[in-house]
Image (cartoon, rainbow, N blue to C red; front, side, top):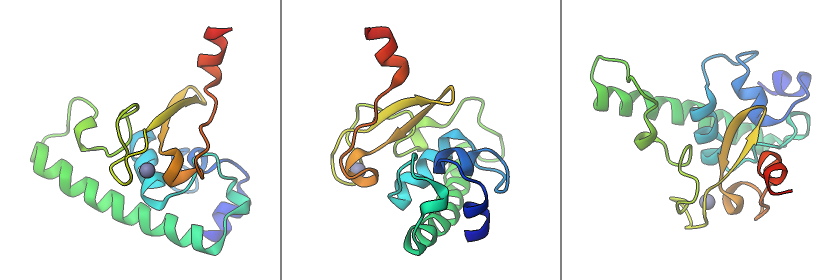
Length: 138
Ligand SMILES: [Zn+2]
């Protein structure tokens, strides 16, 4: 995992959702994993500490395992027709309190998809500019 992260210079959100070298994580669970690991979606993959890589690895396994269990309990054997937003902690929960500390979940449009994150948990309080929104306000 360390080698994969270092070899592919990208932001963390992009790397874990691009289906290579890690397959199976979509936009929604990508946000859930980064929130769980307390890592910024815009962290550079080549600059991650050993501690961050360990947190990411644990969060991928933990969040996906919990996701499978929760989706199975909610939808039994059927695949959900819509994205299971109620099962997410942060994805599609912009404007709501972070389940961990009560900061407000923010979102930015990035690579034509929305990324949700908690500034306090994941970015040392930094609120990232939403370039799409800035363009509309200009
Ligand atoms: Zn938080």
